[in-house]
Amino acid sequence: LATRHCITRVELSVCCGNLLDRDVTSKSDPFCVLFNEVDSSWIEIGRTETAVNNLNPVFGVKFKVDYHFEEVQKLKFALFDEDKCSSQLYEHDFLGEYICTLGVVCYMTHCSWSLLSCMQITALELSDNRIITLTLCGRKLDKKDFFGKSDPYLEFHKQGDDGKWMLVHRTEVIKNTLDPVWKPFTVPLISLCNGDVDRSIKVLCYDYDNDGGHDFIGEFQTTVNKMSEAQNSLEVRDGFESYSSLSMGVCSVERDYTFLDYILGGCQIMFTVGIDFTASNGNPREASSLHFINPLGSNEYLSAILAVGQIIQDYDTDKMFPALGFGAQLPPDWKVSHEFAINFDPTNPFCQGVEGIAQAYSVCLPHIRFYGPTNFSPIITHVARFATQALQQETAAQYFTLLIITDGVISDMDETRHAIVQAAKLPMSIIIIGVGNADFAAMEFLDGDSSVLRSYTGEEAVRDIVQFVPFRDFRNAPKETLAKSVLAELPQQALVHHHACCKCLFTVYKKNTMKKCMKRFFNMYSSDFLTLSESKTLWKRNTVCVKEYYFAVP
Image (cartoon, rainbow, N blue to C red; front, side, top):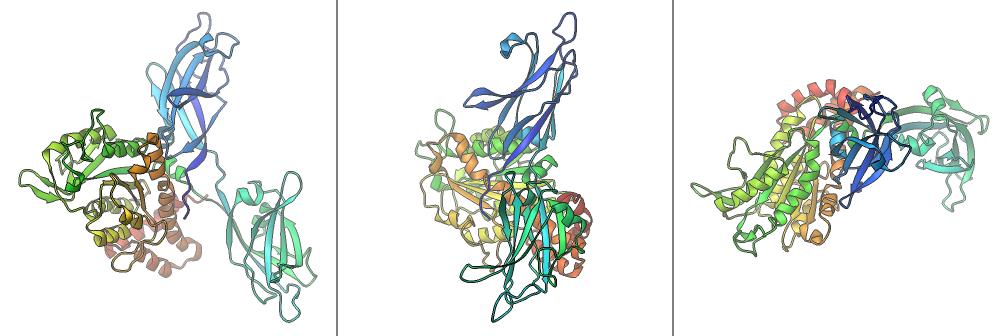
């Protein structure tokens, strides 16, 4: 799948309670102004109407903003009491403000600010994510070829506002038949009819010719509403020879759930950091070391942690993140570990926010000995165990993201490939950031954009879950550029996982092919982290619950 940035139009609604009364003879006349932070300056996006004489306003004017998952979108909601007929804010009394990120607003569904007064902000996705699936067949179509039967295909056109017809979809060609059955196809409803189920659609049937001179067989006009009402019984003869017809088999309109739908539904992104403490990084006390903390209190490891963590922390309720290290010797016996808590508390490796990770990292450095080798598989397996537990829950409430920061070549490549292939079956993604100037060809291999990753057993990854970027490409770029790059694929990876779960399980409801679906399910989820017995338990639970959460079928 191609990388798609998660850009969605979001509507923000604001209501307030118990506002300050700035007027002497009456109550305040509040209005709300929304600002977006751009280059450390607040830029006004819009204003609500004024709620006259009202300390508990529910504003009717909504704010519309674009949601970008991979960016920190800082917002300020400012309240003013209108005193004069002026567009200048300094002419009005200031009542209060609330500063947050759009990610927090979306994740919390509604976000409240309360001191003496309170403000509630609610997010709603505006995008039309409906999709339509159609199945058509022809009967006794006109014979257009001299030496054989026709090679029919269909074209779907929608009518524009100017009355002109525009091609939306073309089916496959069915060779040498007068009774074609075209494969089911799915298109966005917005593409087929601009989201208007009563907008005219023209369906044309042609006989395909190799020279491009396709012969016209027939046509008809309809709407999505008409097709939905008449599915399995619609037979069109108008526009065709009297003995010919087109029949509608299936016409279903469903919602194609987006990454933001899962976030609005309460799905948390569970963030874990894995840090490379191998000897190839150099002595952290020397300026040449990649772990050397400069006078500004930073290095490439810290920059990577902060860049990614500041985005993801908005999607976690308690903001407690495990931080693990690998490739170092630990006191007191100085044994090498490839899976240790950098706060030295194996029973509680959690740090409070990304700042807590940075602090634990700085404290850890002088107390360990850098060693080796560079093994990724223990940390990947560690996070995968928690993702396996989440998979057995009755809702898709958690998606795990492992950030690995490393300086060199992987020593356990076979084990790492196997761990990634197994983790691809779980609600989990892996981000690898390469620091320093080493050769990262092996990392590019793990990032399965160009080819499917395989385990040493030959098993293929069911989806791509790895994103790799070298830090050196972003040394001179704004800090937010790194986060945009490494997080660009995460929404799509999460969607592919959720949709794969749904598609597999929902087959039971659609086609009643229980045996076939169970086999596919067990093959998909029986892994090193989930036994066959656990898979069967998960199957029994999810065949009941998946309809409610993953698909949320209307």
